[in-house]
Image (tube, rainbow, N blue to C red; front, side, top):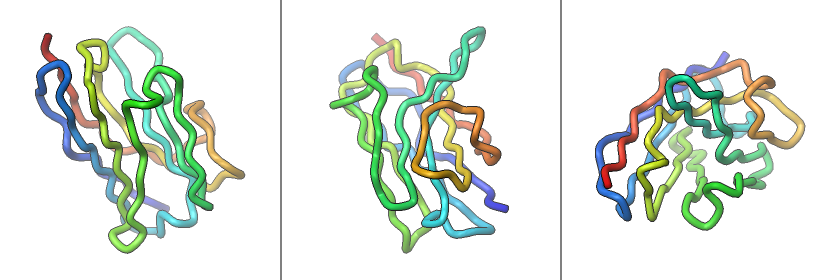
Length: 123
């Protein structure tokens, strides 16, 4: 079983950048598909990006060109670099992982979730 802890959230002005981290323990990230999601109160969880266990990445149109998913297997950590942030990016951001064929930004297949980290973008 893998345990996930996100960090790196905070308050940033529009146009700014943040880098979120998701550290895994209890298992090796390299064996898992990992994804980033976000959620605003009252709305469904939105899939942003994912990386498969062979390193292929996928991005939702809403973040393509602004967000970059990377991984550091030596640190058992994945990152979401977020640039050109907009007020509508304000949400709680979660990482999720599971053993999958490929990866997906649909939340249902993921059994392992972090606790979330708040990102607030001011206008």
